[in-house]
Length: 366
Image (cartoon, rainbow, N blue to C red; front, side, top):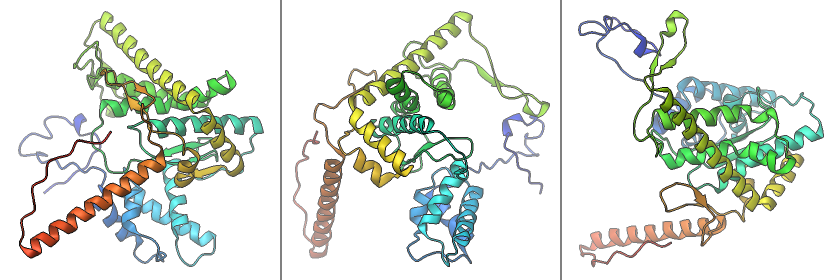
């Protein structure tokens, strides 16, 4: 039996993968939450974890991490605890290790002027505020203006669960969040910086894939434009073979530009509407340099979730009946209590052998 591994299965010669040769292919994706918890248990053996550490919670905070990332996470946390002369690894070291794995170690030795710190604070606040207000963006987990790796600051948004597909509304919100930093610089300084180069690159790539691969353009319809080609093992990188006319190429560029411009305008609308919340976040960042998830919720307490327009365009608008974050938490808590009461009623009825009365369905609350 011969076993081989590759990250480029599509590049293999067909003669190698025909029946009788490497005809069985096993795809190994990044682990899900249960897999991450099991991997963390393996790598945490023999390491002094504090009693407060819950590996299930840690697995939920690391979506998309591979096995190597999780091993690196535990090792980084152990090194941090040793440097701080602690006898146990606490959640503080694990949180710091997550940031190290995602964005690299802190570079506090880098000296920046107050003007640059202010620009970075507004830039990261733009990302955080737009992402916090959008209905389909991932929750903002942390905002910092401490340099890590090549970045001068970052806004960490983590999904609440493992995701394998993305809806068009989620990609549209992702575009607006990516452009939130550049838009904040334009609103405050009217002179954008080079700090948004990577955000623009990512946003353009997402918009182009939406048009060319995912068929999410209303004008061009559900068609794929261009086929990936190129043998990377011959020194060439992935490229796309143009199987469409120059006229269609112009339409593709126009659609990408329209998506980017619409996301840019949405980010501007949100930031302009919640200017006070933006100023509060900037003041906190300049003073403390890092704001965690709980503090983000406090600072943005008056920022409701915006709504998508109902005309099918997926554009966002300020809600007619805004529900503030604290009200959302109260509603969620009340709903959870109601579910628990219904479960207890069902359990009691089953124990007594009674049939539950049939109830009419109630309309969904706005």
